[in-house]
Image (cartoon, rainbow, N blue to C red):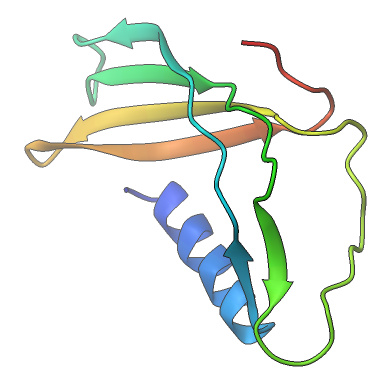
Length: 109
């Protein structure tokens, strides 16, 4: 991963750790598709992927210590959510540079 995606991800993992939370169960199965590829893009070749994973039947956040986690906000729609990922070719390797998740509606494959 590259920044800004890398710093967002590291921050997310740090927050889970500090709150003593972890994911348990079977994660959603990805259903990726390439929506755009611009191998001549400057400054970096770019590929855009979208994902509408299977609904997360048993994938949930649990407390590793202390009381169960509370939900501060609830999404407008149930999962799965469409994720859009931008991957770039930088320093002789491909990596995620940006990822957004649309929680406003349930995605359809």
